[in-house]
Length: 447
Ligand code: FAD
Ligand code: SF4
Image 1 (cartoon, helix red, strand yellow):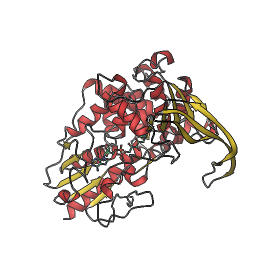
Image 2: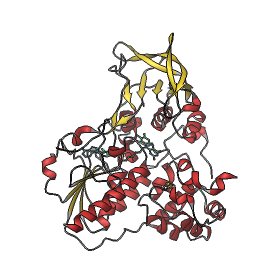
Image 3: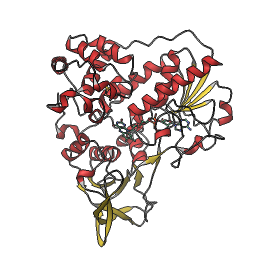
Image 4: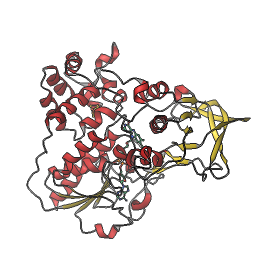
């Protein structure tokens, strides 16, 4: 188990983490205590039977382990790589009290990767029900809902506005953390269940909401792809990107291979990334691989960074420079970016969540020279479709309000994932999608 060397990984976009060898996986699985009241399962939003699959790995039954995981999780190779296990299943592992918790995510990834090497089996479908369901958005929420509903025998049409399925898995999370062939294999398996995928269909624009009215149910999985901006002077200069646009140009449209692929990004020799979350780390590490010197500006202290500790560690290893307790006040340039002016911040009182509230120190400003600024300060639900649905109840951030069962205020419309929670995680989107799919099947069986 280990990572590629820093000098190697900065040369390409290949995966950083090697994963476990069979011997390492069996040894790690052998540490599991097989607790009777296994707390880790409660920490998993899709309730995988963690002790059972770990026991199968310990016995060398890798394909059986993968089969076991698949009963609850349709995207195990993805989750094993990107779930924040340290705050979920692994956080509750009893071994964590005295030593290192079992590396549940690594074991899940191992079993799923072994299974992929041997060829994946398309999950079976129940007898056709004749019910038609439109799923909007093919990120983790939409794709999992489509799979769960197809299993029940419903006919699924999956609409996606982009030219490839997967949502953030495809356009957001860089391939050095989540290889695109892994994403494709898991999505293809779900599509092979007979899901009718319609790419380049932006529902609410190229397909009207009224055209969906013939479906028996609609599931909204449109995500939170609307980037927030700081609202400071200079944001309209050439060379200013949202992290979403920047990552989409590189991950999905291969800007790093321009002109072979026809999407360029602005000249990047010195990049400033603004923000401290996982999206900021992904943007910064991607810019490093594009050959730029990268500075990350964050308004609180290093210990307050909301990104996963492992991502911060990788970013530091890869040479991203951190300027903390600082906030941009102006992006400088005539037509293109030449620098960013920041003000130093001091930490004052604590907010409701216990984080310090940063306040600017008057006149204490400085300039960082740069040719690209990437803003990664958060994002909200995409309003294009949800704003057109009459009577759909929404929250303050335009998020669709649902119960735990994914039901919205509209009797035929259900929702799951980031469009309901705001920017969250892959596994929470999947958990929500499973519940919403269950509610849809229940509703349709009563009709
Ligand atoms: P999305 O993945 O956003 O998918 C929504 C899909 O709907 C998109 O494909 C979009 O094109 C489509 N769509 C939107 N509107 C329409 C419309 N009107 N018509 C048709 N299609 C439409 N989470 C983790 O757990 N671990 C991580 O390491 C992690 N890293 C991340 C890194 C980045 C850069 C980002 C941006 C997010 C990251 N997340 C991570 C968060 C995670 O990816 C999201 O929480 C998750 O993808 C939400 O899934 P979703 O299906 O709700 O939305
Ligand atoms: Fe842990 Fe995520 Fe796997 Fe659940 S899906 S066991 S939370 S890694």
